[in-house]
Each structure stands twice: as structure tokens, then as C-alpha cells.
Amino acid sequence: VFAETSCSTGVQHFPDQTDRSDFGPIPSWLTQTFDIWIAHLTTSPFNTLSLEENGACLRDQIDFVYSSSHGSKVILVAHSMGGLVSRAAIEGGSMDYDRVTRLVTLGSPHLGVPMNNFLIAALCNAGDLGACEFSELGMAQIFNPGHPIRNDETEYYVVGGHESNFRPRFDGGSGDGIISQRSATFLPGSAVT
Image (cartoon, rainbow, N blue to C red; front, side, top):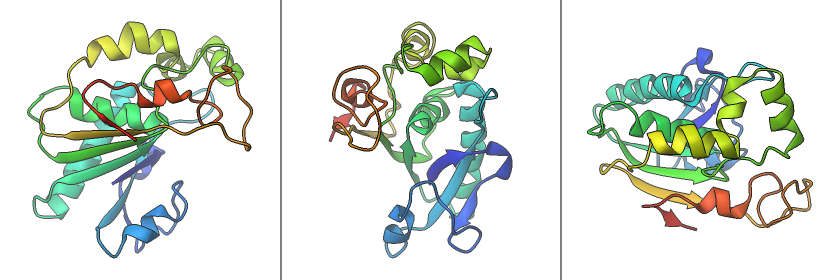
């Protein structure tokens, strides 16, 4: 399951229900080995649901895929905010949630995004609580304290990039241009790549 934006769309099977993915060609590469589903989260300028609300939506979509695949466990691949939402889905509520065997996060801000990132600062100032939640302060004071323990049923893998020529740097360190490598790869109990 690939976690993307817009929860209202529900989960879609790839490529017969949707051939579009925010993950570029990656789902196509995996269709020979895996049954691919695209899950959707709700995020938009000035209206991002909280990580917990999106997590509940994603959990419903995981349950649908799990049932549709006759009880086969799910591997989640998530980018940026999707990694945090995936953590909310599998670490929130009952810790015996056993439907996800592996979570791979790609450039997810596990330590948050610096408030000197003009986009996050603008969204927070405009009252977008979801965006404020994944700022460094929101992650330190709200999300990470509420999710201190990894789900024992799930293997965690985190991937963080190096500096990119495609995006400007906001925090002066190495990373993918927006998420620092330290934030993308800091998740106790995970394998780092």
C-alpha cells in the first residue's frame, strides 16, 4: 500500500482502478511481485487533517486491503507526511494491530520540519493545525511523545536522502531539500538506509 493524499478517494487498486501515483514509476516496478494499492490521505493548502485523523482513515484503508487480500499482511510505503500518518495508523489505538508487516518511510520528518521552512510557518500562522503538528515543535511536544513505542508486529525502515539539486535547502543541513537527513532517519527501533 502506497500512502498518498486525499483520504476521501479511498484506497484504489493499481493499475486497474488508478494508474496515477505520487510515487512515479515505483508502483509499476513492483506489480510483478506485489499486489499494489494506493491509499489516500487528506492534505491540502490550509486544510490538513491531524496525523491521528489521517491515521484513522489510513487504518480503514489498510483494513479494506487486508480483507480484500484474504488476510495477507500489508507492506506500507510512505513519503513525507505519509510516513507520520502511517505511524499514527499502526501505533495508535490497539498496539496489537497486526495487519502491517513492514513500514518503509521515504523522507518522512520523524523529528519534524523546521519552523523556518516558510511553507510550514505560513500554514501554521494561517491556522492549519495538521501542518503545525509536523513542525519540529509539534513532533517534539505532541506526536512523538504519543507514539514512543514501535508496533512489535511491524518492521520499520527509514530512508533519508542527501542534498538535492532540485530543491532549496531551508535548514542548512543534508537531506532531500526540505526534510533533513537526521529527521528522516531518526526513528528508534527502525532500520536506517
